[in-house]
Image (cartoon, rainbow, N blue to C red; front, side, top):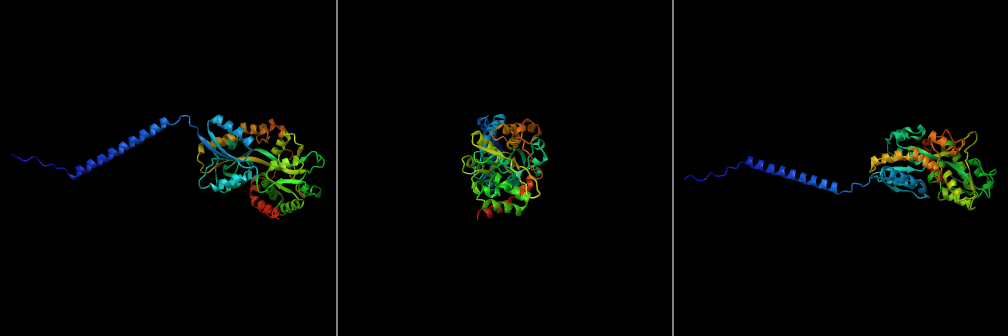
Length: 365
């Protein structure tokens, strides 16, 4: 009787068995992962909203209806963060710089364009791709390489108390503020922030640094007082704490709706042989490089720069001045007489550092 045959299991067979088992296990894991993902997708709320993170320095009562209109039209939820009146715009600009390595915002709606230009120069912004945003406005309102677009302007103005100053006596030119008759009767917002900061930079750009320094010194010697924001300037003038001040058109309109005794002058910037009218400052919108929601960001940019929003801003309490020609014709009462024509926004942005240095030198004394 022959013994039973011994098992002849070769090394190749063992390898093939182990390889097959490994492949089977990998396939099983892949299948289980697919089932888990499919289950999560089935269980996830189908109406979960898309999101976009917006930083904005426009006044909240003006910005909120526009944000709500975008959410209603697109279904995209806007996570919005504003700025304080005192640090208007500058606080958010600094926050964007701090977050540069790990951006949290998708879109920046700035109430003035000059610091947005600085952000573009620092490579914090991404090019805007929405053709509707880029082609619907004059070239002056599009940044180099499409890093920002401008819309809905305001003008820098002088506000005066109508019970204390007559229209005939109100200053018409910026240099008039250094007249001794206004000594101790003038207020402005702190020039480190907001549109006042841009205004001083514009003076450096059009007058030159020496002339701007001379004017700031004369203003300081005339006992100008610095307040926390343009709305505080208007309030101070309305309450009789000052007679005149520098501010923006929208803040004066707001005060007049409250029946405050104030009016405005579109302040000129003539000096020596130079003739320069009112300074115009547009809003600006930009997209943040590396933001978490780039597709939703483009939709929000396109919405904010649309004719619908520019019309909303013109009809709002801020009465922003449109840049679209068809809307200018629709709102002729918002036209600004003789605005400065030769000054580019980029020139003002380039003068920002010099302006801040001058203000620190003059107002720290």
